Image (cartoon, rainbow, N blue to C red):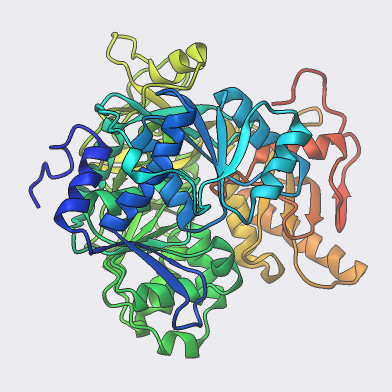
Length: 585
């Protein structure tokens, strides 16, 4: 394929229709619903996928006006894929979303999305239709809930080509909503095609590269970082349930082997879970030598996880140079930087220099912190900027990552002030506009290193610390915390002090919990030089996360201060929960 292969068509619809004509019977998408059964998967070729998408689109065109928003509420499976493409084919705007779920905070988030987008209709599948309609009624929403996989849904012969153009809005990708206020990133056809082509060229992907994975399709990494690039290239994408992966992580790797998958992406925790849960017998049955592109992104990437994973699955033929640490965000469609075909670049850094916002080599015999490089970003203008005065910083200095490029979205849906603040940033000399990512990082020898989120940065007694470093170190040193989530933040008592929340699994006596808490406090002090003013151990699942798996530290801080958590064990110093008015973030 030529370098411009994904950019010659004016829209994603034109490209997919071309594939349906040129490779009608080639497998386009497969969903594995039963890993142990010979007939446990369903596959659609490009022509069949095109026909089913036109069928859904014809119904939408009869119910909606061009540009109307359509909420997609599907469990993992092909119905989501068909419904999403049906929205593209109909000229309406897709709004992917997780299911409302059983917890009120999950339902509130989906309700906020539906109301913010002013959706016209909610599509789901027949198995979830009752749940979706119950949620619609309970929330008093003025929209219809219908199952797009019912046999008589639409008529492909009645579909009308919407004549989509590159700058036509195609979806609202709602951000994680860690502040409780999700915002819809406006993504157009041009964004999708350019970003997929950027991923293709950066990684060296071709139409013969099979894609596959378990990341939810309502998440930008699953939809725009995996499914759509595969469909645009005319290759095959194999999907499985996220829950199947969490229950039996080896099934992800077995699927990669079975379906000859060359590209599969996952957050750092997934690789860590494989390291801890794979057995020698499972590894002995795997052949991972054809897995060329193992993308790691969506959350802080740990050097120890990369090394441990490569070593653990090396007997299955996996090569360390296949690991591809990546950086991306929904506001830039998804993919910003990352490369494979080389070992990950891991830079040892002096921890004290990192606290001073510079990257310097560690002193001989001194402490060292390993930073993982996320390659270069050839399709973006990247600036590292002082968050306070917007000065462009030199190589080796850490600041906020600013981006400019064709993959950057137009802004947030009906949020002009937030769009201006985030998407229209300029340096003091007027250069711009740039996208303010909210992420902290540095450029060093052309490599992008991401150090954390600006809103999560902890300032303790004048020192700058990253909460994910503390959380990772606790999991590393204390086995009862392995593979579980934690949240570290600060509270003023009266000066900033550290509070640690962490999930724990297993049965423990009160004395054992007290000993673990003491050991955790000692780890935080020994490794980071700060004391712990509050420590709370929680049941698995209690630490709230975004749809992409990122810890909602601000949300957990609020729950802690309100006394709304249900601890398994806690040690809290007096005054820690008595936060002065107006200081909650």
